[in-house]
Amino acid sequence: VSDSAYQIDWPLGFRSFLTFLTPVNFDFLAMTGIGCIVNYNFFDDFVVMQLLPLILMATIFLIYSIGLKFHYYKEKENFTHAMKVVYPNHCIHYTMWLLLVIYPPLSRRVFEFFQCSESIDGESYLVKDYRVKCYDGRWITMLSVAIPALILYPFGIPFFILFTLLRKRKHLNDDAVSHRFGFLYNAYLPHAFLWDVWELFRKLFLTGA
Image (cartoon, rainbow, N blue to C red; front, side, top):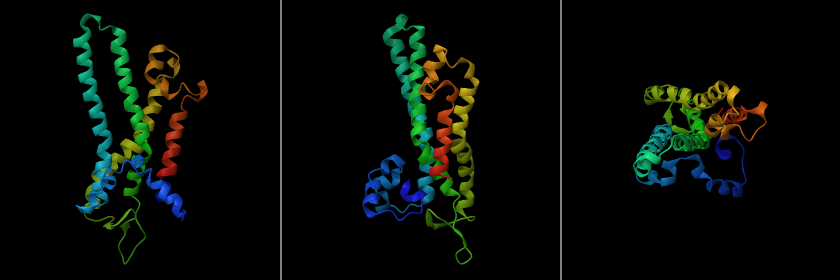
């Protein structure tokens, strides 16, 4: 996000290099080049971005449900309790890794909704898209999406991990807890088990706030 989050006149070579990282921002409308065919603005891109985590989680849950039924059918009575535990653990790991990866661009997009310009001829415009007026019309309507998104993603994801790890803090070395949530803290010293939460807030500040 160096080209958009920071007001720095980057050299042309560096800006060209950043274009290769566009997929990491999950800006699907920009990547598809659909703007050459259909006129869309920030709000369309914003809605797609906010739906992305929900679509990903629904897809993972669907694949998980189908896979679980397939294993039941294949293994039948050999489908042990350990297998029942391990399978959802993989599903949880995959879901949370995806959330950690998309967290910075997702949070940045939420903050961009509230970043309005100074008054220009009595009007304030969205810095990300100067075709959009702030505090008026569709911007007001989209607040019903933006405010829940602000609570759910930039703050909701790290606080969910914080709450989960604090609730399990006395049992972090237990096999059941470690196998399910250990990827969030096993790489750190015991007293630093909340380091990933700190990292999420640091990313939020650097790329969003």
